[in-house]
Image (cartoon, rainbow over the protein chains, first blue to last red):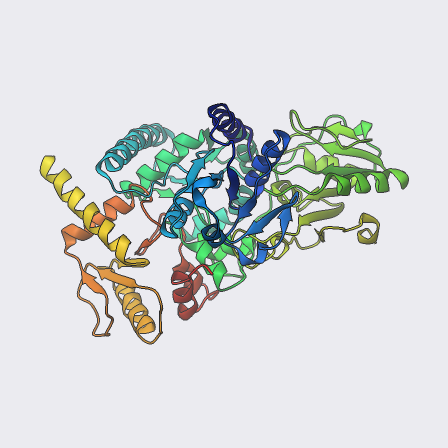
Length: 418
Length: 130
């Protein structure tokens, strides 16, 4: 979860605690994802033990997070719902609430993060008016953007990326040139959320790119849909709600790259992905032992974390082998014990890894940025399913040419690094 | 403006009722020939399946001979209002408008690029959470 959403979640959680709304309740969390795990952590730290995590994915049932069992939402019908509180920090809040209510659940439901301003499962007059205001606000923002772009980039396609994820942006950018060629567009302007995503865009060349807030991006995209703006393209597999590509995963395994190539852009399956070519050299390479260092990347925004113990084992293993060990960190993130913190920019990280010679990271968007780095690279996958599909994360995100390793409960690192 | 609002509210009310009755509602933009063909195939597909869920198929143009129980033809005005509503916000996950899109990718791209068969695409559209 990113910092802003985390702050919002904690603010709402504190409000809930202050109001006493959580006391003597059986707490359920809906949707097993990274955000839910962070909420579970926050509750446990405050002495509240959630009863269970509800999830629609049958593959997850029976598993647990820190001892909290993952169960089917239908199991709520077996308990006295007036004593229950369901907390939701997932994007599908509206759909989850709808599901619970339709199944007869009458207890409390609290949204602790507003991830998805597109959705409100109501057609009341009040909601309609509110949503009409929202879309009109977006129309104004879209018009302003169009006016601004018209001066410099007449005839350009607006590529509006609805979600802040480095990996998504990387894969999108690697197929974008072929898509532009297919459509015959004069060029394109790219809108993203967050500076890191803009940095990924810049790896691929001198595209005009601009950073938007999540709210502005959501509203501009909504306006583009509402006004049927033909100069807008939204390159994502499941956002906003009108995009149905994710449904294919219920019947077939389609790795993320194919989703972008064939589903998002409609390009032939054998289309060759473009590679980024605008990297910078890290200024302090001399402080890294060439060919004798390892860069760890234990943090990811939207992926369930690996157990601390696993990272301790990994760091110890490389230290004992005589490697100089670094942890790639951003802002408040802590370096793994016994390792040196390092914070290259996205454009510099490739030079760092190539210089060090070895990279071990949780499978995040950073691994995509490092796809073409010439080094020994290992991507670690927590043993989880992709969204509510039956496909494992490794099946969706595997990277060719890397060592792809699934970390299960009880995995021992020494047995992996062979 | 007031009349326009009234019509919008009427559309909203009708779709609200349909959402209460049906678990999946598909609206095909049959002004597009390819979508009209897709709608025909879809109806043929669901007519030979023993679906346990209630599905409503709607379109804005004449519909195939295929016998499906729940079908509703919308006027152009009704279609436009519903389309506007659909593109204004997500009011349900039970409604899906099938149209030829250039603003974003869709399941139809998978069929065009050979990753899915049409049958698989229909299966994906009709998927029910276990």
